[in-house]
Length: 275
Image 1 (cartoon, helix red, strand yellow):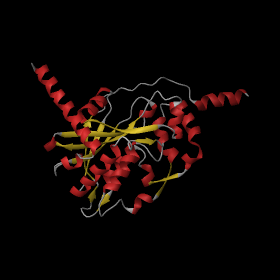
Image 2 (image 1 turned 60 degrees about the vertical axis):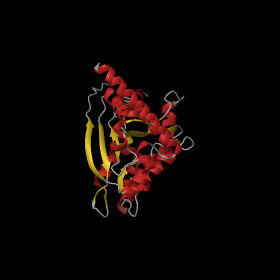
Image 3 (image 1 turned 90 degrees about the horizontal axis):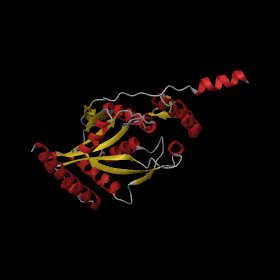
């Protein structure tokens, strides 16, 4: 009997989710939200595949009064694309904005044992309205595809940009344009320590552009750096962080194991010595 009830509830949730998606496509969903709607940024932990090793960023829109709880995800792509990792590094992959129920999103990350943090944004009612209008426009079939760029246009920068565009009568402080001491390459290398040969290939594919010094704004191309900035960015008039709360809503349970491989450095040194 309990299983039957769960199935019925699950079916109702799926029907509700489909209806919400239809509203988004027609552009009428923004009028459906109550004043208590919450918009939050979801930051997901590293996965066991190279393309997952940088973590992930998504958007949650939750309005319990209207029965809406939906996640927008700018990180959808076709993994079967030929020369996937080369195109991944060179910015030649087509990505798209997709949507799922919050329950479905969490079930997937729970299955793979990856942690998820949620940061609820301190938006005014007008900013919430603007955000929903922007995401509605972006989700239209003719707008949802984009050309992925490793540093400048990915799942994290897309969220950063839509948050910035939603702000009314305020903006990120000028300090975000401050150039740091770190290059783009230095920022992503720690995430690839388990993929030494792939890292070598990406290093070569990215070329000298990766050696540019990154500003604080640029650093937000990485999900964890975006999360840190949302925690620390102070906006007027409340003089409080843009993210008014941060919670770990899913703990990491995966046990990652990687095959032992010989470092490229060792191989090249051996070849050098032999020569």
